[in-house]
Image (tube, rainbow, N blue to C red; front, top):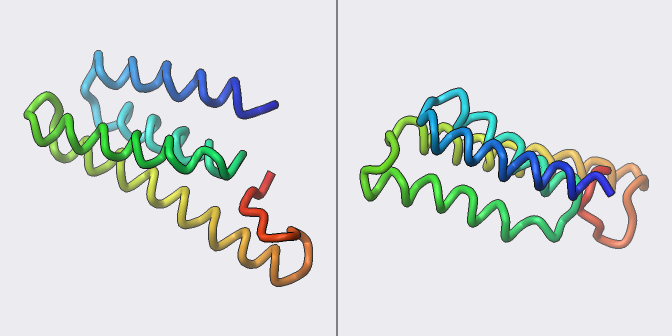
Length: 103
């Protein structure tokens, strides 16, 4: 399953972001965390936790607000694009039975 290595990559990128506190690492973390939902719909709680964690770090002053917003926006963007793509695929009859995974 592709989910397991991407989940491991998400955890590694979170650690990298926590060390560097850079916008680039926040963006990478957000994009890869969002990709988990593209792979499997059961990752939706992971998206909520990832975005919420970044925002929590910004609220307590442990991370920059800009980086936290960038990472959270990346999570939301990938989620939104996945939903749009899946709705299109359902419309043309490719995805079936309410599945929300493009992979």
